[in-house]
Length: 99
Image 1: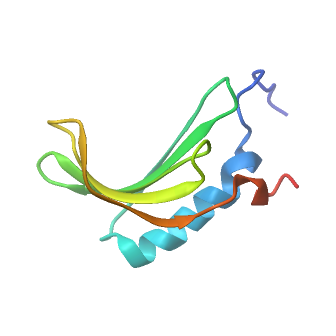
Image 2 (image 1 turned 45 degrees about the horizontal axis):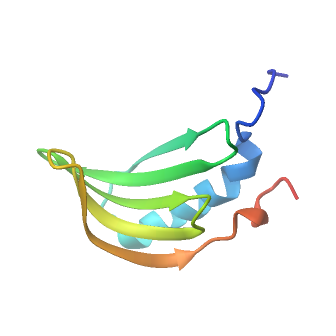
């Protein structure tokens, strides 16, 4: 079993959120989609499921464990700005598989 780094969330802590975002992507995003998870030593994490829009944008669903909401938005990578942002739903991270 791999050694855990103190404070960084394990996959079972965000797995349910990840699965729920993939399900929401079916309804809210154009296919194909990619997924990305960032986890930090303070115990927080961010899950992103997105569809790349050439040349420099991506349509995505964003979740941060501190907020507990899923946001939809179109990110312009050249400007670093999230446009058309709206809240899709809330997810309680406490519903993870680690309970």
